[in-house]
Length: 181
Image (cartoon, rainbow, N blue to C red; front, side):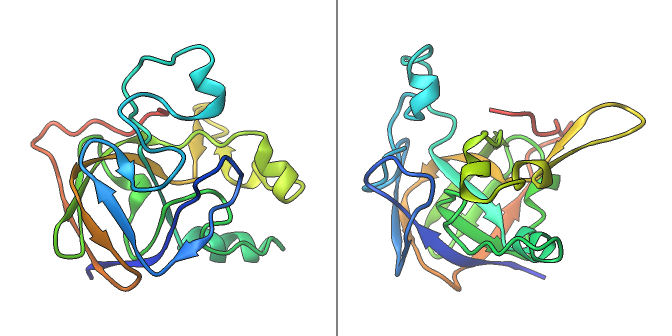
């Protein structure tokens, strides 16, 4: 089954949530046009203070809509854009993708997955206790599983709208699992 864009969101100012839009324009090498996190170098507030000149590997935040269903079963009502993502997907195993996977969205846009989103403590300001639900620790390995989506860079720009198809293109072998960026 091909994936699909469920919603698109952007915000011109720093805030936790991003309003849904009818469309967003992805700009090659920058991110979402008009979004506060767009840019060639790091644009996330906390990281800008100590790594301002590093490349922005977090130009676009994608989150799977299925997470909202999982959270609803635990009593958390969350909708697209409310956790700060730019693109909400459905039927794409974002967390299972390898580093470097390409996501073809709509007619032209191509994103390269760079890593996992590291959820911040602000998520508990949005919904108390939610931080503990967007990551879990494997009791055997002691490793964390981060569930709050993936980050990507724009390899080819274009307009993206809800209901646009998403095609996944895997990188050449060997595949490398996603790490936090």
